[in-house]
Image (cartoon, rainbow, N blue to C red; front, side, top):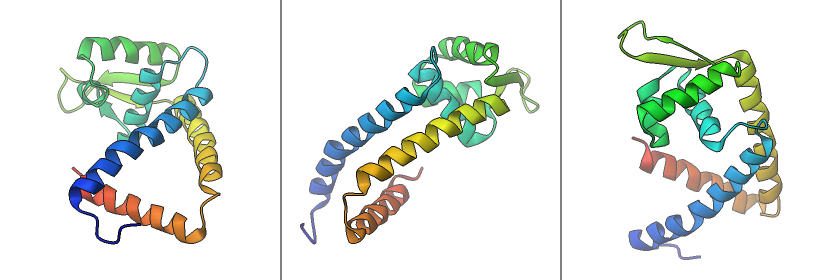
Length: 146
């Protein structure tokens, strides 16, 4: 392990490792989603849950989709009883979306299952290695916090 790696080396490590980690997380989340729920819908639910109530345009931006596509996706979530949408109290032209208790429960179930799988994968690391990973995650969160 290099004690003082240059920033370009750190950047290369992030570009190599983060996609591998994300593939694992996406695969685990995918296995735990309700049948018929698409990965983008699931990601939309994560975005909405993080904010408690999200504007439709914020969800679209998070997903990298158009507002029209996101609107159809949210309409499907509403139809399944996983989300509710209503005009924003601040700007009536904006749509506010929040998860229903059913949507929150589904998301929590997938989150807990994925967390358990990640814990299993990390259990092969020593306590010192797990501490180093945790420390690195805190540093990355601070470095990339918008």
